[in-house]
Length: 158
Image (tube, rainbow, N blue to C red; front, side):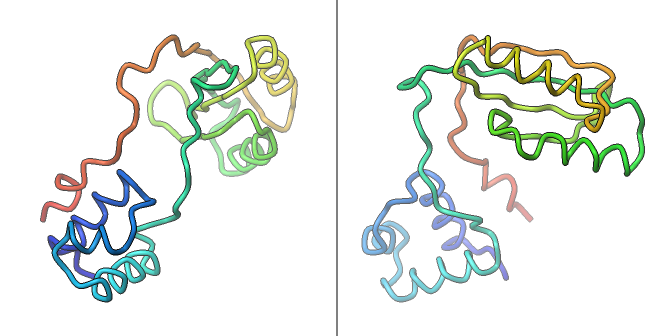
């Protein structure tokens, strides 16, 4: 599928406001409603659009957010899979990315408070299946630049 200027504008509009009506979107893009809807469906079926969801405003709820760097005891596929299984069912871990460099993974925790983070992180460290050799945690004090979408024009630039 080619990402032309219409598709790019659709993606940009939807990542800013996924609740936009098809009518309003079609007017913004400059296409008929049916053509616009067909493009959205195709972008979705081709997995350019993964899902539509609401982002909860964490400032409205009690929470403590941490980024945690994790180094594993061994660098092999079995250890990595064991680690993934160990973190998979921990609801406070809301994302995990594999990294290059000194640490193997970066986890994002969202907990009700620092005590809950401490309890969960200690359990994770004690879990032999996780195979963690070292963890460093960083408390989020302020979000100075919240995520507002991907730089699509740069990413789709041929």
